[in-house]
Image 1 (tube, rainbow, N blue to C red):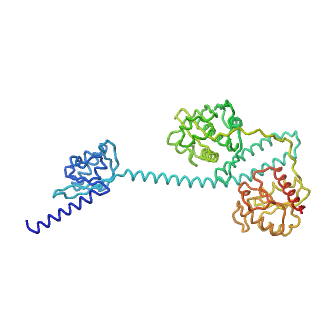
Image 2 (cartoon, rainbow, N blue to C red):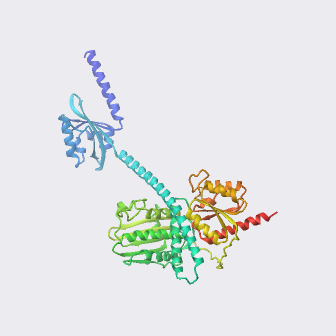
Length: 537
């Protein structure tokens, strides 16, 4: 052997050793197939992907690994490549492992020479992890989209609730004025009572919207669950058509108690009932019942309920059309609805979900097409409250004697009805609707103002965005610095106004919507407290 030949063979041996070193440590599977499709080389990763050993692969060909559903396509691609016809260099397919499990792979193939014979180099990439990562990315993107949608819903709900609370305040104060002017036996009083009841129901809706938008906490108190169900039933019977039978169970002994916002609990039941009503266009049965949640139920729903916590379970069941599995997975998404355009907002169950979250509760759904749907509402159970003595004596509303009240607010309807309320209580009212008015009133009437009422909707000193504690504080500070020390009432639908140390002891919060006596009592209390402070040594 000449020196040149020896050098060539050593180089070839070195190259082959380097190839094996690279191939055996590759992250992808490597296979080399002859023109007949038989494997003449396989690396360790190819054996790992296919579950065969390297020795077993060398006795096989690509037809042995291809999935039966893919064999015809793979044959065509392989033949076209050898014949020089256009064929995909990279494509996805499915292999069948030795254990019989299908595995999705990405194939990259090209022609090569192996030991002086034409062959095909095949790179196999297991794409299970890639597909899982893509699905996880999609899931995270969906959650992000949902979170953004929820934020938009919250902002919308907050704006609607603020505007609606102003309207409800006007309605309730107008009702009070009407009742004062009518005789006790006037026939319109029944209609007025209906308006007042509807306004109080609407107050609960706005509170639910503010809770949903996380701007207001639920006002929780001990509630006897069976009583709440019966109260809700009276409202539901006005909502449901005669073709739907409503059955409300009330057979729990001892009574079940929960800590909840009663209006929001009613809102939950109302939304679920409306959902059931729409699922039964031709009539059916709607059953609502409550019982202590059993341990088996809690174990069944262990992903959402803490089995160490005692729960009550409110069941809302209908005999409607049922919900398909793909729809069940989305029913609590905001804006998702299967109803025709204009028939549903897609917010009902989303609000239910938000209210239950505020109450540390959970909701699950079981449904079967053609047989109906059952919602299980789990709420933490509470002990029965201690009996409380109540004083039924009517509380007298303090009246003024011509004292001047400065009323500051942007909404002319609010200013108008509050002015009427204050004048009916014996006060003289000066209205200020914008920055110029406020400054003029401050300069002109500073010595006669005996009380200040600031609507939370008032814009800031620059005329900017309303609905902020900063705007109200800015104007209140301005009035105080001008020497007006009169007690102040801030009217707002944001409970956070009284959760800060921003206001002095002469300033109190009155939440919207309110009634005339509420405003009169608060002004009277503040003026009494202020007078007491002034006479102290």
